[in-house]
Length: 104
Image (tube, rainbow, N blue to C red; front, side, top):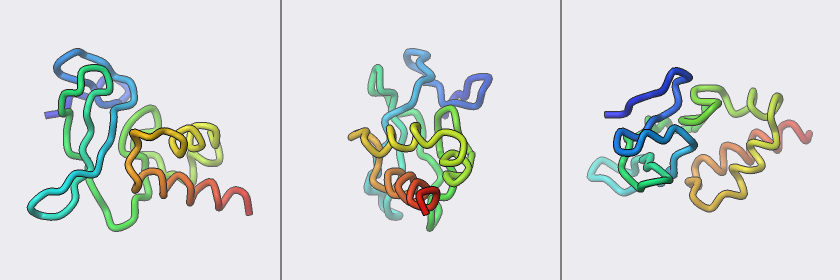
């Protein structure tokens, strides 16, 4: 089970790190799961909810915030997400979509 810190960020139960986890889409018997792993020790943290369209950030300092709102207040964060190899394709696409909308 995940262990959020005081700000609601995911916290690794193994090493206690609360920074941005490595997020991967992993195959599962019921389809693809979005899974968070600790970037520091590699331990599984939790499966993250998956909706048809990813509208809100599933982890980190903007956990639960809509991507469109993040684009308005911190577009550099979304640009960083897009350039980070460890970020899942689904999250990258949501970030790119939000950035596209603010450029219009």
